[in-house]
Image (tube, rainbow, N blue to C red):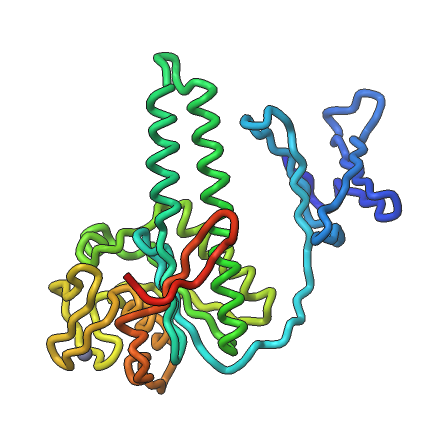
Length: 297
Ligand SMILES: [Zn+2]
């Protein structure tokens, strides 16, 4: 159930929200009064929408409050970064002089562990409670991962003076192409969620976001532009027939995406620090979040 602006009265003095019941649900009272406690880092103001959502895992109703936030953050700089989304590495990021790789081990481990719990306990009459628990727990951990991932990407963009972030949109890439470059697409839900999270977290920091179709970015060379439809990605490496460069496949893709919106730019391969072939790998742990590791695997 959703309340729009004119069905909501916000009492900021007492931290209360009054939700109108509408004409058909009047039983003496014509509104529901809700008291709330905002989390320390959230400001409840300019409420646009309130949604009542039932969460089966917790067995209770929750109110989701959507607030409008005005953004006037200054752009962090003039640089452009490119992001390539995938499943083996949920994200690869190319800066003008640096490259990052975010492996998805935790996602795969979670999938394995929680799916087993789901299968083992699912009965003849649909999913058992344990199976449901496993599915929801995995969903929450996945969402937490995507939140942390988008936050880390955006923070590193701020540190790299990035004013424009180009995120390749994988929706148009067909499955054949995915199989070919080895880094399969995240499931629909996950990549859309991730794009959405990166988008709003980046805009909050004053970074412009563009999302061009990423088709072709994994089958051309980010250094010389050579196109090769017949997969040059072997064991995750792009090997160019024309200029001979060896690059990490996902970073090559991310750098192509970075260059997509630029008229003139030196490719990452020209930075001379070897990061095209050996990006910095940022590992995730649920305790410490994302931490860099010395070299790529
Ligand atoms: Zn080349």
